[in-house]
Image 1: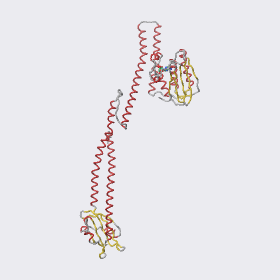
Image 2: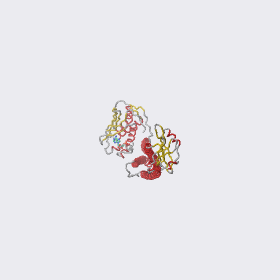
Image 3: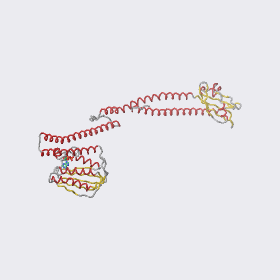
Image 4: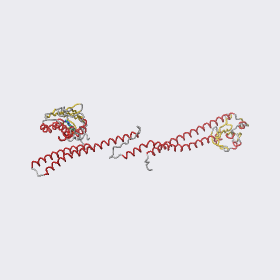
Length: 468
Ligand code: ADP
């Protein structure tokens, strides 16, 4: 059977099927209960009549019989059956000629003569009778047999009428329920069709569209809202991606334009060796800048792709900080910035050593660049509360509160011109944050203009470095 591709149809089919089973059970229940009750009360009435008649049996030459008045006054003679038989099966009384002629059931007679009572169905004329055969006790013996019955045609008519009603009502109810089911399922599911149509129109190129269906807060409404939220997140992610690409291209174009300018000037006319050397030096610096930039971009791209698995190795933090300090000391000395190391406790982290070193170098490099000669940069670490903290503080220019929330964003620079002149593209801190988070840690900053800046990186102790 081919799969039904409409949820509406499937729902309705299941619903109708279930209803069909329930209705069938219900109808059968009604029919059987009524049938049982009707037969019960018919049997009761026959039994009562039999009891009464047994009380008025008379004997004529030791053969049981009933007084003639039992039959003559009976207005329902046609619908009742009263017959008395003697022990040899001869009819001594019958309430009508038709009853008298009705065949005698030898088996029932024999059983009654043995003292048993039985019930059977006898057709008399056009009536079907339910007849009870019972022994007539006489002086501790059985003197004969009494047959008492009543027409069961009314009962059959009633049951037949009920069957007819059920047979008509059953399909009618199912048909009505099917139409109702299709209608209700259609109503409940119509927003989903609208949702599908709208969702089809939203493409990757135009993620600004929203379903914005004014639906109540039910399953479908929540689905539509969740869908809108997802599109909004995708929209934001795509926008960030586009901005990132645009910023990256812009950053790469700047050194390329500088190189092109220098080369064109140099080629403009013949120059002496010193001039060429100067040009080559500038070109070299710009190429260095580009290498750094491309390196940062690669790191971030891999970070985004979750491609850099941070190796979890035992890292001796004091040694690592010492190495970073020694690496930046010459540049600091050259700038006239004092570099101070505040030794802390011995501590080993499980982390990716190269990434941790890159983080420290980025922070130290920033501290050096944004601190005027004569200033001081301090680096240290501490352990507490199951965490290790590393800080880099400077007495530099600081960052105004309005810029603070943005400094970890990609390509964000407080003073573009100055930062760029100092070699920054605004990617350093975003890389620092990623490295900290990839290790299950975090990075925070405290700063005030003119009062210096303090970056603090917190790592959970013993935390396994994780792939971001
Ligand atoms: P950049 O390569 O431009 O330094 P970063 O992401 O490392 O980019 O830093 C972003 C911005 O944060 C910088 O442009 C600078 O304005 C500010 N900043 C970072 N570190 C410091 C610091 N130690 N003191 C003052 N400003 C800082």
